[in-house]
Image 1 (tube, rainbow, N blue to C red):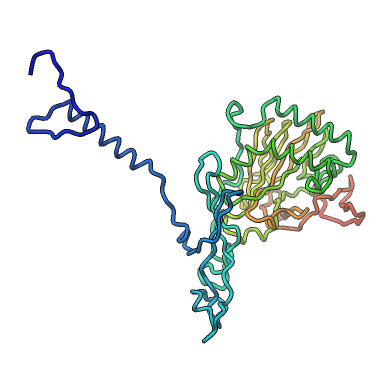
Image 2 (cartoon, one colour):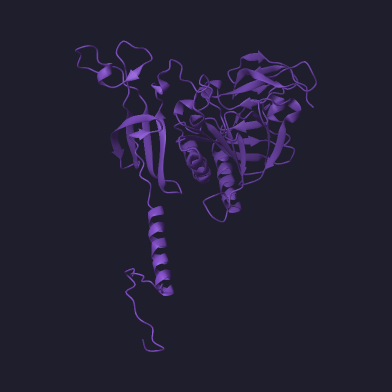
Length: 400
């Protein structure tokens, strides 16, 4: 080798290393091996949805419009059995040609979903064949709900389609315009003594309301995506708006010192990943009250201020109430219910919870009743008047 010259090598191959290790060759070989390993690691994992989450499925169809695939459960109710599920053949009576009842379990796989761009499978129709047991509710099987029951999220406004200051001003302006054109836009809400309002019929075939719904859905889109990427089974959502007038008492006081859940107790029979979640996004600052868990006392009630553009997301398990408006301005916020099935949306009622009365600081007890969201409490009385005019008495609460 002539001094001062560097031998050339084919960069596309890995040369053999002899007894004397050339450090340049060793470095090249190590780098190419690392690249090969990296390529292997970065390959997209292929999921067999025919055998997914302890169920077997048959591919049914693909929707190009929705960019999703449908899979149907392979289990059939065994002939002559009430709780045993098996194959299609096992479901036929002796000599029969028609199969018995098929489990309605339906798996949907959304492709290129959300910011991650990956698959997001979720159960659209619940299985009947779970564990081959008579009782299949999550409560009966002792399933624990380990989801965070309340989270406060301050999104990065600079990145993502979240509500900036200008975006908030635009939405508030749309509400003002809607109020001018629709005097019946806002309705009284339960626990509000006519000082707390909501828009209950944004999904009616009213042209004015539909236009406002589109605006609210657009404003909440990025926030809803946060929840759906966390809980991909919550495919369905309904949006709305809330408003507290200046000086409005808390919803806790309005309900006779009771907290509530947005959803009926029946949703707790679902697997936790199928249970609904609510979100509230502030257009103005607002106060929010909640109980950290269902083993707490009345003195454990917490309260926080949520600022414009921030979101709180809370599960069906979270007992809460709207806080008081101790300002001289209206407080408007947007909300959404997210559910795995449209039947899980609130039907115009909330579930209030009792305390174990008997001492000055009682423990939370049990659900007391459902309260129509269009209730009005008569100031200074223990009576609640329905929108229909009927009057009902409730437990009297003392303001603190």
